[in-house]
Structures are given as structure tokens and as C-alpha cells.
Amino acid sequence: MHLKYCSMYNARMREGIVQIRVCRSCGLRYPLTDERAFGIRCPVCLGETRLAAQRKANFEASPIQQHTKKEKWGGIAVLLDNIRSAGNVGSILRSAEGFGFSRAYLCGITPTPENNAVKKTALGAEESVTWSYHKDAVKLAKGLRTKGWDIVSLEEGKNASNIADARRELDLARQTVLIVGNEITGVDASLLELCKRIYYIPMRGEKKSFNVAVAFGIAAYAFRATG
Picture (cartoon, rainbow, N blue to C red):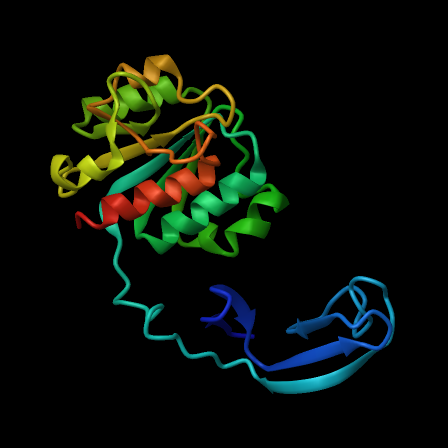
């Protein structure tokens, strides 16, 4: 069946009937949008449920989430340098698609969309964003720079600039690749040496960094604001 976008959850849902069911045992209220492993049984306690409401899954985007004309930056890509978590990879692909990135380079130990766990969080974005796998991110980045690409990354350090500065420093009319690094070790030092710009995201709490998928979303939004 054709897939529609749900503005409430910002997720793909099957066109058809959405049932709202309530568990007679534990009281859980939840939407049943497609076939589930337990059918109409409660997903928490497996108790019997009753139909509380239903409607067509033909969601309209809210004014805040209204989709603009589909646009892709032909020259901007993301490079995932040894990302361990398949969930993070899928989330990054989903954000990359949403912000119009045209390509994703998956490097080192980064799992690819052939991994079901990546597909689970990408929610189909892997079909819209062109991706390729590379064993050596440094070799790839050197090749891209030789071809005229600007290399930038997300990483903290004395040479890093506030992500807010990207709005005036980046020329996204040029081919640009944004590097995000390993959840523990960060971006490979040899990759940082190839970067034209390095950016950090200011932290207001006690933690020193965001989850890599969250950080990419923040950076992608900051870059998108320059487009």
C-alpha cells in the first residue's frame, strides 16, 4: 500500500484505517496502524483490548510541519566515520534525507542499510539518500578534497568554531561533506587535518557532547539555514 506521512508523529504510516485501542487489563491506550505481532492484543501485557476510536490514516501536515518543495543539495553529503550504533546510523540517514543531503558515505565499522537495525530507524530514508560503503575514511576524504570538495567536521577542540558561525562561513554552493565521528573516540585526527572548518556545538549542561545522531541533526539544521 502507498505510504503516507503522519504529521503527528513525523513518521511513515500505512494508508488505511488507524485504530485506537485500550487494554481491558492494564489500561494502555495505543494506536494500531498495521499488522502487529500480537494482533489486537495489548503490546505490554498481551491482554484483550477494546476499540476506542478509528479513523482514516490520511494525515495532513500541520502548518509547522508543512512539506516544502522537495529539494536536494547536489553538493552536500555526510561522512560517518566509524559510527558503532546501527540506530544512530539510521537516525542520521533519516535526518539527512529530511534536510536534503544528497549522499552518505559510510566508513570503517559503520553499519550499512543492509543491516535491519539501520533500516528500522531510517524508515525508508536509505532509499532516498544515495549511500556507499568505504573501508578507509581518510583515503575517501583525500579523494574528495582532490576533486574540490570542502571537508568540514563536528568535533570539539581549540581550532573548532561555534556551529552558529557556519551560517556565514560556509558556501554550500560548493561541494561539501560533513564528517561525524565515533561515539566514543570522535573524528579521526587524520580526517581533522583535511578539514577546511571544524565546528562544535555549545553545551549548556554538564555533559560534554550530544548523541552523534542528535549532533548531526543540529548541524544539518544550522547548515540548512544557510541554503
